[in-house]
Length: 144
Ligand code: DHK
Image (cartoon, rainbow, N blue to C red; front, top):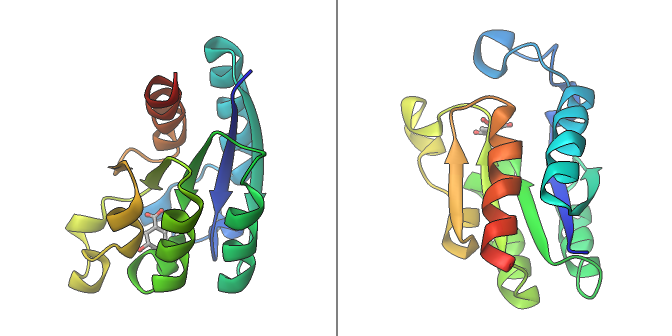
């Protein structure tokens, strides 16, 4: 069975409380619940992880080698700044789908740049937490 890592970056542990007008009221528990249901449907295994620390995210991506067949990554604000996270995805060569809850292109111009996007297969943004289950479908399709 294929294994997918769902990895969230900084401040995404505050989902549900954080700027609900932008990120909605769904929590990370809701992401887990919807992804578990989708994973059963797609017959894949999922692991969820979150860190607020850039280096930890790099370590988690490196550790995903030989463990996971794909990554769904919302790197939060590091999306727009982190060459290290981009390099980790390229180095491990694990197919990665970039997710954002909000539509980053409707927001400040500094959010329009994505380093993660240079390494990812594709990007899903603007669909709230549904983006994670859409990404699960996309990555499963890609790796099968
Ligand atoms: C989440 C964040 O924390 C922001 O820094 C990004 C992203 C957008 C999201 O929409 O999920 O700019």
